[in-house]
Length: 386
Ligand SMILES: Cc1cc2nc3c(=O)[nH]c(=O)nc-3n(C[C@H](O)[C@H](O)[C@H](O)COP(=O)(O)OP(=O)(O)OC[C@H]3O[C@@H](n4cnc5c(N)ncnc54)[C@H](O)[C@@H]3O)c2cc1C
Image 1 (tube, rainbow, N blue to C red):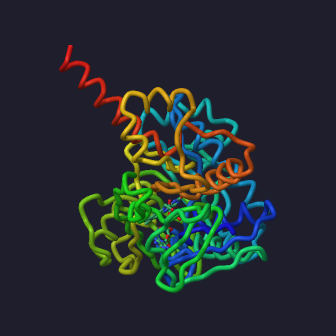
Image 2: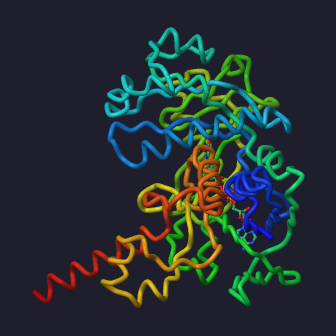
């Protein structure tokens, strides 16, 4: 049996990828339904990430964007998750302007007039236009994925502990224990509450989005626009404006003043949203799971005790692809602010690993954090003893 822990976009896309590959899946979510934590944005934006550096990030996000578009197109609009099509991005710095020339595969650089026509509202400057970018109702998308006939979902069920027993995994839950052959942990920053994953980065960053009541002027917006903040076309009478990135606020209470700050910012480049009378007192708060290198954590889970005990030899073994991994234990987490771009590619990668068709991806694998720390400490040790 395949068990996925966590019913957000990461978990639902793993369950869906496994089901599409012909496997039966049990999807476990501690909340009352899927897509209720970070993946509950009523109008999330799928768009590529632009970078002028030839970094691992460009390739991860470029490939991720392609795979997400493909899967969303395949799913068609079964559950009404698809909202508007096309996303505009105004360059917020020179770096972004420089990459305009290189991004012709995913998008186009348009002048102010053309971009205004695509988005439906007057913009004073040009920017990128991504015709395949889009807005989606993220919880409905999770629901559409988890609706596959090979997936059984158990909500209101928490996995407290997992342990290896007689060649399989035993999951201790808030109800009866479950036995599984393969376990996929997609529990965002809560992954680190499981013993096998307690060494992973677990920083969480609060995000608040504002629900902005549409006015006759703002209703003209046809496609999402991103710059410092973003705003989406009205759906059911509301736009979504987002999102704050608050590292230091831990509570989940909606702060109306943060909504007004978001709107003030957006009003500087999308004038209709700057009107003082706009009603934006409602919204939503959730927490992203972030990582130090801003890339997700995707792959097999190494046995940390063996790794730590190995010291210098462990690094050498890593370099020779001889890492001691837990059997059949996988993780997809740390999707930060871009889960719509990364979760589907992560799921596809994990299924490829299970099937033995793909190799570990060094850029994303969980061990990279432990490895960097280990190399640093070995270097320090060398420096102090030489
Ligand atoms: C305000 C905000 C706006 C955003 N906007 C965008 C956007 O426009 N575009 C974009 O691409 N991304 C956006 N993101 C990021 C995106 O939402 C996340 O990257 C994505 O939702 C992460 O999915 P996840 O499944 O990893 O996490 P989550 O959706 O948080 O899912 C994790 C799930 O695991 C469950 N869980 C945890 N522990 C256990 C356990 N022990 N047992 C059972 N269940 C467990 C949790 O209850 C939760 O449902 C936004 C995020 C925020 C906060």
